[in-house]
Every structure is written in C-alpha cells, then in structure tokens.
Image (cartoon, rainbow, N blue to C red; front, side):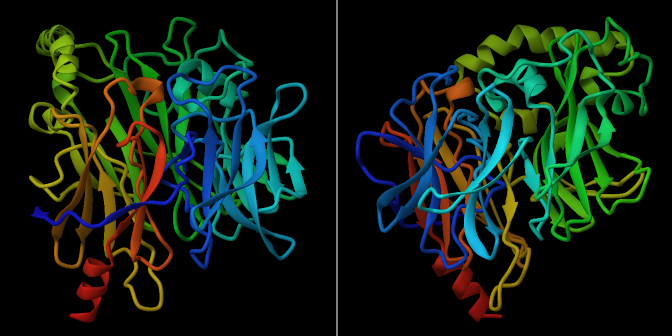
Amino acid sequence: MILRHLPITQLSPDDQTHYWVGYYDKQPWSADGSQLLTHRTKFLDHFPTPGEPCQIGTIVDGEFIHAATTDAWNWQQGAHLRWCTLTGQEALMFNDLDDDANPITRWVTTQGDFLHSIDSPIYAVTPDGTTGLTLDFGRLTRLREEYGYPAISDKHPNDPAPKEEGLWKVDLITGQQTLLVSINQLALIDPGEIDLTADSAPHQHINHIMINPAGTRCCFLHRYDRDDGILQSRLFSIGLDGTDPQTPRLLMEGMVSHYDWLDDDSILAWGGKRKLLGSGTSKKSPKASVITLARKTLKPIYYAMGKPRFLMNKVMGDSYLVIPDQDDPETTTFAKGQLTCDGHNTFYRGNDTVEPNRWMVTDGYPDLKSKQPLYLWDLAKDTGYEIGRYHTPKHLDGPTRVDLHPRFSPDAKSICIDSAMNEARAIYRVDIAELTETQESNE
C-alpha cells in the first residue's frame, strides 16, 4: 500500500448545520459536476424521531439550495436521495412519508417544484431510470433501525419469514409493484438443519439491494440474528428481465458486509464464511461452541479497543472477495494482505478517457486513534494508495456514526466523502486527479 495523502476541501457550507450525502451507492454529483446532492439537519447527536424531518437540496459553489423536506431518512442512507431524469429534465428523487405516515417516493426539481410521486419507497434504480427495487421498510426499521425510517411499522411483526414481504420491483411511472421473491421463499433455499420459517425461527429481513451495471440482475442480503448473537448474512442475486419465475441464486453465506458489482457477472464484497463460528443453519460443533463463547467474552475488549476491524481479517479470515454471479461460485481473494478492513467499496464506471472498472475507492472504520482511512485501488496495476486518514468523533457511533461512504465524481478527478472530522457533519472533496489522470496518460 502506497501512502499518498491527497488534497481535501470542504464542499458544504460552514453554517452551523450538518450536511451529508448518504450511502456510497448513490452518485451525488450532477452529470456536469456542478451540483452536489445533500441532506441537511440542525442536529447530529441522536437518531431521528418521528416529526424530525431533514432538508434535501443541492450544493452549488458552496451554497445550499433547498428543494424539499422529508420525514423518511436516517444517518446511514439519508432518504435514498438521487438524481434522475423525468420528463426530459434533471430532477431529485427521494423517499418521504405521506400524510398517513406511509412511505412514498417523490420527484422535485432542484428548485423544489413538484414533478411526480408514487405510493412506494425506492431503494435502487435501474440505469435506464424506468424501474426501481425496494423492500419492506417497516420490517427494516424494526430489525435494523439504523437503515429504517422513524414512524414506519412492520406489517408482520410476529412472522419470522413472511410470504407477503421481500424484494419488490416497482414501475417508477405507475408505481405498480411486483414481488420478485419473498422472505419466506429465501428461507426455504438451502435451509440446513434449522427451519427458518418456523414460529420459533429468527426474524429475517432484506437489505442492501444493488443492481448490476447492465440493469439485468441485482444482489441483496437476506439477514437474521442467530441465537448466539451473530448476524448471519446470505448474499443472493436474481434476474430483473421479467422472466417468470425468477430463481434467486445463493452466492455466499456467513459474514457479508458491503459490496459493489465489479462487472455484470461478478461482485466484490467484504466477507468470510467464518467456519470457526459454525453455520447459521446447522447445529454447532463443540469446537464452534467454544469459539463462539470466546467471541462473546472478548467482545467487550474489542469494543474498548475502538472496534479495530482489521482483527476480523486476522482472526476470522474476512477479506475482500470476488464472487462470480453463478451457481456454486468459487471466490477469490482481492488485494490480499493490503486491504484488510471492511469498507464501502465502489467502482468508477468509466468515461471517454478513463477505463471502466479500473479504479475502486473504499474506506475503513476508525482505527485505534479514531481515524478513518480512505483508499484508492488501481486494478490495472494491482496497486493501492492510502489517500487520506481523517478524525472521527468517538461519541458518534452506532446508528449516529459517520462513515466516509466515498463516491467518484463523473470525471474521475475527485472523490467526495461524508465526515465529522471537524465535529460537524460535512461533505468533502478529495482531489485524485494526480493519480487517475497520470496513470491513464502513462498507458
């Protein structure tokens, strides 16, 4: 890993409020790079409660331009705010609540003029902008509060694996919803020795939907808390081309965290099978029971150390893995021994001068000195750069944490991050042109 800390500039106004983009899978810059999507609040120290909206809008030349407010938001993913094209014009698309506290999607202009709405929240959008994918936010709110919305309730709180909830496909014009796969169906795929549909089964949910660059398939996580307190993740993919029925493909089970499509046929994910801890769908061996007990005993020490995520690589064997989107995929390790910490990885998709999928940016969680690293990886040369390391306040943790969530600019000359390095949530730009432009010109 080459140490090359690059220039960083604050983009959001310094006006005693707090700004952030949201999740790493959203492109915050407008196509010409002149506007940046943002959320804004007056507080940063607690999870939002019902009746605490946030503002959304754009940042232009360091000034905030207000467009709307929303009651459907959280610190990790905001309101799933994104750019879209509607009726021939660039517009803002985001989740909100209607007057009865039901989640919806709204479209407005950058000046706040209403354009369109549908009676469904949206999580991911196909590249052509015609189709959305979503999940049941009430269930997500109950089981993973930090990704949910205050005031949203679960429609099936007593069912561990409901047939009426799951992954949905949504027409972004009509709002028509089609259930692609239910949680109950997922629970029946390779269930092992544990009946995940039984009344006594752990309650399951879906999260982290991501569509491949071609818009033909998506991947997502089927998750639940095991009885030993471990979060079990099952990475699935499924087709979006309208073929009926679509069969979900189980790609990996164990620990799966963040990921991005490397190309249309493979996924780069941070994960590990964690065989030492036993399977989430089989009875534990004596060895796995001992290891699980040791994990519980050591957990308070791990937290006291500041949750150094690199230990998951050293002890549990977690790493970045390339996972082919195929039946019984053979995974390969990516950046072995260099990228040793879970992060939010995303690829640059290319333009007229920059090769697609050559560059990847990812971050890490705070180190023992409460600093978060930022990495840029050159896949063509199999070379990584640490391009920054930034302070994060210790009191911002859990649902209020501030992850960097790095994202490329359209021209591959910049990366923007969310950070509280100066005690306020703000958006920053890291100048990477000296690496991306120099490397391309030398080819």
